[in-house]
Image (cartoon, rainbow, N blue to C red; front, side, top):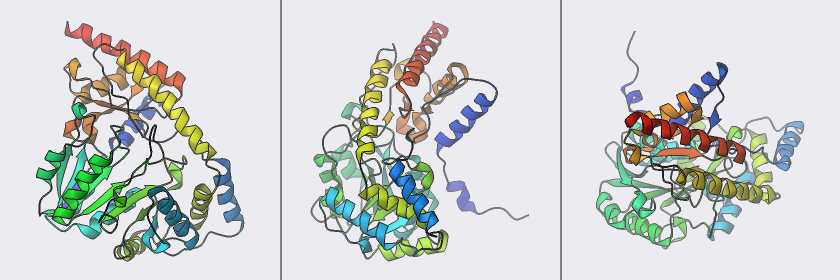
Length: 393
């Protein structure tokens, strides 16, 4: 039998799903696991959104739609982005896709030639590097360091972006560190992109999960609208992870090509989920505010708890719903610590190295869980860390 394509060897993965599978297997054997590994809200999709999908099904909205999405949702997305980013957009700038990842995948396929460089955050969402490498690009990690509050270093960015750079990927609020890019950070990226005539993929999927201030998009800076692709969606803001509904906002020059990639791969998104998306954007936003308030309280509970553990320290994230505590003083690889926490303490976390080599010495914990479970997780982590320290004595 002939071998599979060589390009498969360039594909990475998302460790969260692997750890989830292992945690579920332990649960099947009777173990009690506190899940802090998976990045999805633990809330239900708001009722008015679910009702919109039911109504659409009852009205026969079960057929193909245009590959770029039905007009109603493209218009709703354009209006939402125009209002929140203070930029003029029309439905022609919007392409609807099944989740956020396809925009990342399609944009890289559409822009990156063999050997082109792609600058991306490290620690950062692992699919950035995976898809860039799969497409034949050269991934260039941009370190985010704790001593800078997990913000980029403008001088380091200026050195990494070169004439060979085709795309810069940014993520704010960010996964896994929870950092938020301020104007100075965005201006540094914009300056580099303009100087070297490259594109920016701005992953803004967590833009509504922000604990102070207002979200700012790099697309709003002078000269950046035409070269910025905004990635956004419904999974995080509206607790719609399983609905698989996302979108990209981009130049009308690029949008037809992203649409063609949709035609060649998924044909279209389900019509009834698109109509649910319209209800999400145009309906009552009360549940979004309540969810963010709950995440804020959970963040404070978890971060304070982690900082009370000897050998663990944690910065307070500004957005998203992840804590990224340092375990460097434990003197053990992050993967080993994460494995011990799962197997021995019953707490599912991710090693920081799942998000790049600069994540060594850290863990990622999702606080999309109840305060009671977060307290139990801290109790178990404390006991496990104390046990590790005892072994090292």
